Length: 474
Image (tube, rainbow, N blue to C red; front, side, top):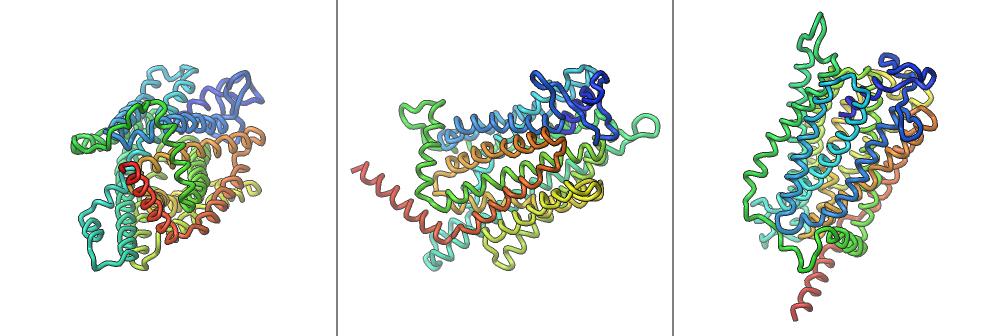
């Protein structure tokens, strides 16, 4: 979808040196390309980043209002169903723009569609993730370990941690298997003949066909979750006199108060703020750079996606295998994953000074596709396992929702900062040092977290909660 928006903006934009000529140079993308924005103009690169920032800002408001509702009744299911339906619909909508492909307002319409798509997709990610700790902790093998008197408490916690890693990594692996399947199909379709000695993958319409296919794939895979989830499975009723619109904000205030009692969870919250923004910004910057370096070739981008999907599966399985064989803790694995991902913005920094090195060539994009798959894809599996280790039992949706809010609250910062840098310098590469700095701060914070002491904090927190509940009953 970003490639479609980028293409439409280039098609209806203009070079500020020749503003009377409609359309930018799609072959030599090093030339500037602007589009109308407010009372002035903006580079297309900046516009794409600002669109991401707008979407993330709206997600922040929505998550703050509704995320904690997911702990009550069947709100988790309702929110997931709504975000899934909107996500599938908005992914299919871009094909309607090709009814009148020469409409100069197509890029504006696409911008609105993409904002809705980003909001619904981000919502679905957060609330699917919130279900993960309950799934892993209720595996029969884990439930038996919880009541086994022959296992020490330390071994029991290690056992639970290992299975959380397993479920999270396998879940992420299967998401990448889906990524591989769709990328493989779309890559094959991209080479189908089209016109005179050409392939459909070199046509702009291919991208909108691909979004429709992805929308259908998402819908087909979502249906079993909503159909097969037991109807009686739900959380406790909403507290008396609670208002649906204000309850979320009050819950976030409560979560922020509670998190102060959990020092290491708070440190991880700040670290997560940094590295989630950095990872998100990397994806947005690479999408823009990739679109320009490939001249918006759908075929080329489908192949990059295919390679990344294969290496993503390998990355998750390799990290899971290594952590099991060598009994590497979650924190150590996460630090390795974040550290290797941080090399991407460091690599991009060289592009500020060298015109042929530092993410300036197709060969580097091929290498980046492999690198992202092996080292960036596992970050989401291990970061949610790390979070699951640090949050109190029974408050998964509240704290996963809080982290979802933090994710969206931080995710607009990178695009805005990089957009402003690009706006001022007409060089998106000058934003890479900022992204690298975010990773560096996150690594320092995670190193300072003592997971064993954090678990003691959780036990003390749970005991204090029980004591307060007992006092209220008396």
